[in-house]
Image (cartoon, rainbow, N blue to C red; front, side, top):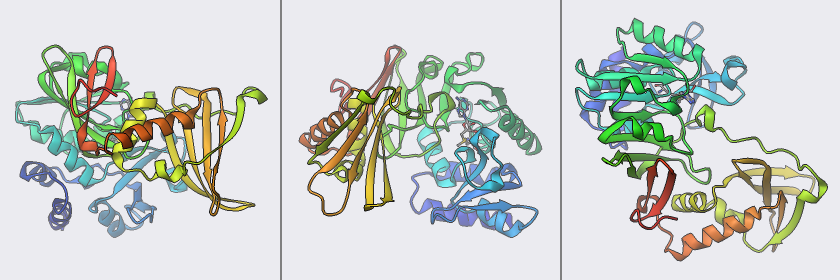
Length: 380
Ligand SMILES: C[S@@+](CC[C@H](N)C(=O)[O-])C[C@H]1O[C@@H](n2cnc3c(N)ncnc32)[C@H](O)[C@@H]1O
């Protein structure tokens, strides 16, 4: 029975999520299966990503829907069929525990006006509508027309009617302002100021912050009467980046003299495996992104730290670790010394006593965002 599956899922999540009874009541009132399309990709935590098909195997589909698993519902902005099971994830129903965590930090009360960015399947919009109640109002924005249409159908079939808008959520939706809560369900590198401008003083914005280095974090901002927002990182949340903030793919060097080789004594794994606070510090200090990957070439196994400047496709590099080597090769395209900048930022973080993410925060004004350590006066 569906009710049993919902209860089992709630039991599983509540063992580690901070969410409380109101969020779980919403899970009971708005069953997830009403929003999952017949074909999806279950991205299980044990890496057993598989196609789920309601018609071909209803039991398997239902089991995936009621497990704590992301269900991917679109690949490559719709250009690749889900059954290919390979491509960039561009829309999904987020894992229920992540949804529960974010809703907990958002703390929607009956009567609230809520703005959601990233309608996706519509499940979160339905949960928000339940939490805001009859006197509340939910506006949800989705950038992808086809995804928005499907969400509209699922919501209508469930008898829930938030205001749905198709467009770039970075602009918010002025018609529904002022909002008491802004709930963002796509990853954000730069917090769009429109969300703060359209929120009420005291309003709360919860978003998945993707610093570009290390872990992704949930960010909970509170808006002050001067239309500034301050907040901290209460936990982790990993979401696909907003379309408008996707990073530019690195390009080959324009000229041979733009390629640089050097060596470093710093093991790239020191940075790659650094605790979560280091990623926030490095990203705040450098604005750079990094990804670590295991690889194999004709000389044997290696690990490569990829560095890139999200704003400049001609500025990127790699640092390679190979077993038994005493120094590590640094390759870089462009003139910015990316690895030196990352190493400087990393050791500055070490000199502060290696603070964890709970000691960092962010302030957002009309002029931009800054990450700070302990208090807003200590911007990085
Ligand atoms: C993880 S899914 C959202 C999950 C959704 N809340 C749910 O309950 O299913 C992220 C969604 O954000 C959408 N998105 C990406 N960039 C956006 C933008 N700039 N404005 C609005 N939506 C965006 C994607 O198309 C995708 O559907």
